[in-house]
Image (cartoon, rainbow, N blue to C red; front, side, top):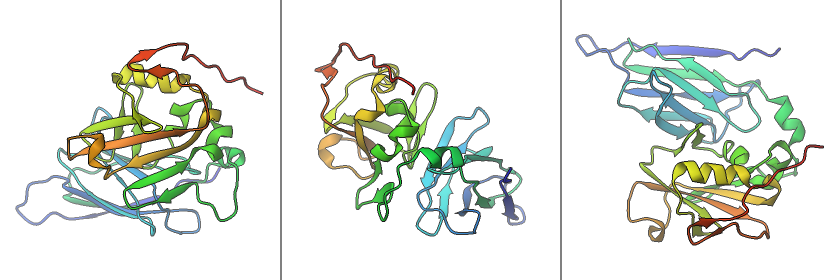
Length: 241
């Protein structure tokens, strides 16, 4: 089994300074030491709650300031196995150099298209090509778990330090509570999803709050199960072959 190699190097806090982690930064690489673009880095507290999220740049580098103190770091990216690392709170700044192990099971199921990335960076959003991940997933929620900067919990969805999230289906807002939304996304067949747009700087028309993030599900032609706040016949079961 290929081992995940994680090297943790910490800078000593200045003499007399309070012992606390106020910044975490580093680099995410693959087995050949190449930087991994758009890896999701989540800082967790002692209860495994997300307190900060960021994504790596094209060189694999990332940095995030954090309050309160994180206790662990979770790094994930499409095509790689997630890596979790405990943070030493005795340090004020933490540098983490993480090498991720390829997820051969996921890669075997992903549709490879020469020259076409699975995730595209745009001015105000990241766009995930859901069609290429469909063979490895059962529903919309399964594919959302691979979206950069998005963390899917058992009972909630969070994104890139955004205080509020707005969810859209083909540009139309889904006005549901989180529990109902997750049930709904889990009921929709992954074959019907074309792309997921993660908007970190969305147009103002989607929300009056400046810190809101937007996740838009772009579907193929399918009958809508959501009409004006009601759900009907939304349970869909994908047969395994």
